[in-house]
Each structure stands twice: as structure tokens, then as C-alpha cells.
Image (cartoon, rainbow, N blue to C red):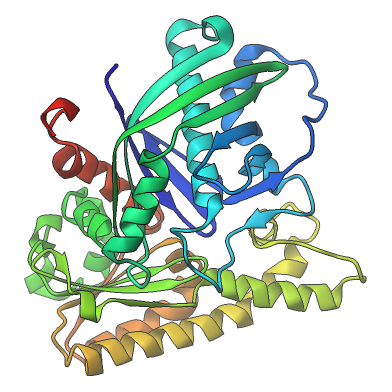
Length: 395
């Protein structure tokens, strides 16, 4: 059995996975449940099509503290109270169970979907066995070899069985991780940039339209540049200084700033406006915020504006300190990406551009269509060209 390549970006807000070349994503939230709920009858083909959004799974793995039955991803996010998501104040992603539960569940669901698409039926005996070559990453502020090895061993050093509810049918997926690589944030995104399509530089070229030196720039031109990469996420913002294609560890750090913190502040404001007992989590808040047809959309939207501005100001201040003090001006580009960069662009871009112009640095803001997936895309590139380039038998 040949191993399938899997890359996973385990975000505080969303988990993004490229499974054998196919990109999928789910909210990073789970819910432990005591028993399987009643499931209405539906065609198997429809169940398969919606399997990732309807994940009800039983996890058997020593990699997690609590084995058992879970709602996972979108199914959990829409189930109400008692949800488990990653605490954006604590970090320690390598120890958290949610990344493991999300990864195992999404791999199992995609394996079932892949089998059904090829065979037009569920597997014999409702059992599948899959072997995986897997990569993921942890924040630069958290990363060291010991923590990376700890997370690698949680996957590679354990057996994993996931029972997935496909309607009333239970399909068991046995997952074996042949090779696992846990790398540091920043490296995958840099690979995704230099291997990217020309339009990954669209915002950059629009910003420096009158600068003839930037007119014919292409992604590979950033290969050997000195770049401060700013990954604005949900729970943290990571600052990764890249020089000669590698992170400079002493110049990499992270802090508890991001769109998730703005969202938490906005939720508190919203709760004060609503009747007592109103409760909502970050994923639910953002779902309302992005849905103009939701009855609470116009109430939610202004609560986030002020909170976003506070986060933007603090992140710009941190970038300024990095460039001027820690790096002593030895920085050619500030690269901004991540899910938070989309939500904060309207309150952050112009001020950060002013800072860049005043300090002889270029601002490279990744366009929205690439900003969220930059890390998982880079991991997939690394899987194919670096981490697992050689067959397992030769490693």
C-alpha cells in the first residue's frame, strides 16, 4: 500500500488539510457526546458528499487523553453549547488534543470519500486501512526540536482507529502514519510564496505601481531576500524572520494577538447588548459576521470594528519594534498573510504601508485568495519536493 501525502495546517480557527492533492477545511472545534444522535435517512451518495460537514466519529487512539464519540468541525460548531476549541491564550498546540482529533477525523472522512468516488460504494465489511506521510507545523514562538518530536510521536508512535458515521452505517478507518514531519511556521509559507503563481504578487505590484524596480518582479525573486513574515491568525500573530531561506530562530517570536482576540472582545460587547443567557463562540460569531442575511449580522458587525482597530495598532507596534530594534533595519520586506490579515486589512494596511515607506522596507501583503492557504500549500509543496521526495523504503 502506497502512503498518501497529507499536509495539515492546524489553526486556532480552522484546520486546513491537503489530502492527496485535495484541499478541505473545517472549523477547529469538537464536542464530546455521550451517544450517537438520531440520524435521518438519506442517500449514501449525499451522505458522502457532505461527510466532512457532518462528522460524527469515534476516536480510538492513545494520542488523545479522552477517547470516545465526538462531533467534529462544522457538525460541532452548529451543535450549540459545551464545545471544545483551542484556548487562544494558552498556546501549547503540540500538547492539545484538538489538533489530533481534527486531523484523524478529517483524514478518515476524506479516505471514505476517496474510496466511494473511485468505487461508487462503501468498502467491503465497512473497513478501510490507510497509510499516511504527514506534515504539519507549530508556531515559531512555540517551536523547538523537543516539541516538534513530541507532536510527531503522537501521530507516528500510536495506532489510530476512527469510526465514522456515514448515516446509519459505521465505517472503520485504521490510520497508520509512516512518516511524520513537524516543521516551524514560516518555512512552508515562504515555499508557497516562491513557488506561487504570478498573481500572488498582485497586491504588491498595485502598491508599488510607480516603482520601476518592482515592475517585473516574480515570486522566485523573493527566494534569498530578508523577509519579516507576519502570520496573523486567530489566536496568535507569529513574526518569522527569514534570511537565506531559513528562519533566524533568535529573531522569531509570537504573541497573543489576532482576529480571535478581537472577536472575543466583540463577543463581550454583544453579550452586554443581548438578554442574559445569550452565548456564542468565536466560530459562531464569525459565521454570523460573514452572513449578511443572518438576523444578527447588523448587530454583530459594528462590535468587531473597534476591537479590530485595537488589534491592528498593537500588531503594527510589534512589527515596528521588530524592524527597527531587533533587526536593526536589516529587513527588505514585510510579508503579511494568514486569516487575520483578511479581516484586519481595512484597518491596518495604510498605516503599515506608511511605516514601511518611512523605513525603506517594502510591504508584501498576500492577496485574500492565497492568504489563508499559504501555510498548507507550502506544506504540500514541501511534502512533494523535500520531506517525502524519496519513497518510504529508501528513507
